[in-house]
Amino acid sequence: SFMLKNDFESISTDKKWILADGAPFCKNSELSTGNARSGKIAFSLPFKDSYAMDYEILNPVPGRKYQISIWRYGAGESAYLVVSSANADLFYDTSKGAEETDDKGWSKISVTFRVPTGYSENKLKVYLWNTGDSPAWFDDFEIVQFK
Image (cartoon, rainbow, N blue to C red; front, side, top):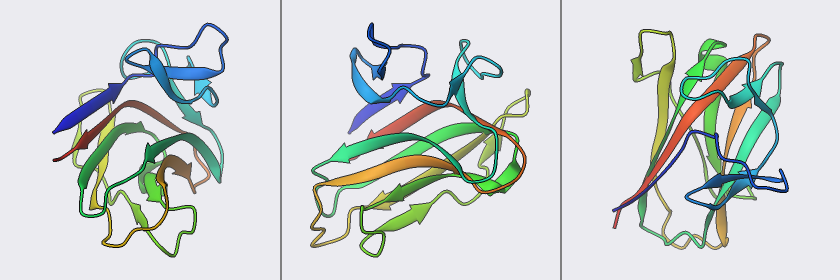
């Protein structure tokens, strides 16, 4: 299996990208230093229908299994992780509630899925969505790609 972790502390010199292992991970937007689980930086989704991250799994292989997790603070179940194809009719899945909570009130949420047989798009989008009225923060992303 292959694993990628990101605590969102590493930013490219031109400030356009959040980096992971020195390579672009996603565009640098919605980051805040107001509340973080590790380091000083986390994604901030302060209001209803705010989004962040937009990480892309490129050329997903049908049948391959992924497990994606992130830690969330605030907003309860109205803020979550989404995995979707560009045409959401082809593939759409979301995290379903907290799996564990740490002593500072951060909750771990995750999505485990298999790329559908015959999947025809060249990527899957992974993003954060706050559908509620209270603010949420997200930190410490992890994706595992199984063989």
